[in-house]
Amino acid sequence: MSTNQALPLFGEMAIFVKVVDTGSFSEAARQLGSTPSATSRGVARLERALGLRLLERTTRKLRLSEAGREVHARCLDMVGAAQAVMAASLLQDAQPRGLQQDAQPRGLVRISVPKAVGRTVVHPHMPDFLALYPEVDVQMRLEDRYMDLIDDPVDLAIRITNHPPPGLMGRHLMDIDHLLCASPQYLARHGTPVHPLELKAHSCIYLGEEPGDAHWKLRGHGKTVTVAVRGRYAANHTGVRLDAVLQHIGIASLPRFTAREALADGRIVQVLPDWNFLPNYSGQLWILHPPTRHLPLKLRVLMDFLAERLGGVDGLQFS
Image (cartoon, rainbow, N blue to C red; front, side):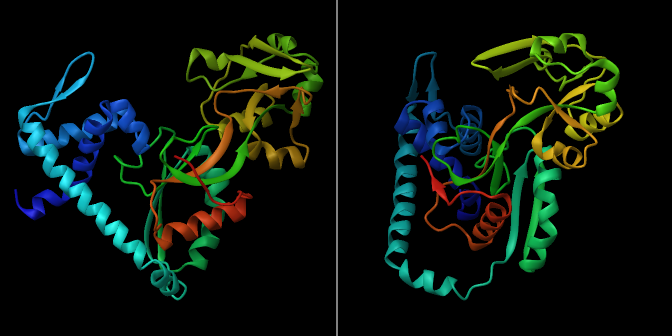
């Protein structure tokens, strides 16, 4: 295999070494900040490229094949060389920092964002970012599925989670909470619920992707109540649910960032304000990247910009 053929496989070689070192795909994925399926695919790609079976897979453990032992030794050399390069770069750490003060961020940043967050929270700030950094281009992938920072072609990922994946680094941008909202006209016509169980008598607009989306959980007054709601309309888009509320169709679950403007001008009101609505999709909003000692300047400026605009805390690292 030529050097040009081997270069695209360096990532897969590192994944293979981590799988052998940890003894499992799941633990390797945890340490890499990936998923077990993506980690398994990485090893499979290496096996296909080499035309060799590297691992003997059983129900209880992984075992190196004869060819795998040889390949593992070579891959260890590659990983060791990469670590030596990183160690050498640390010796020059002071000089690059000085050079970076005069450097201009440039290049393409690829970032994945949940659809509603991207449209409503992130996108409104992007014109200012592009004006501030004229040599940085942004490709925003609006995906509700989690894009893998190793397996997928993205540099940064914004995710809603209370537990950022181990092995990644990032910053907390903001908290995401949800409300129950209705229009004043709907409540005037159908009454205002004062307890979660009274939602059963109302037309409720819910996510509708899974059966559990029609079971609303609320916490307040020292207890948690789960209510099986019903309604004639469900939609898995926050903007559509907001419009349905404005059309007086019923009571909807909405992220605060979606409802904020309509709440402020009185077009909608919060229902059961002394109860906390607990959907599956609430939590903290994080911007994440793979661990590195030298984050490219183009990524750092975007992370700093969004943290400042959205009120995020100082940079955090977790592993």
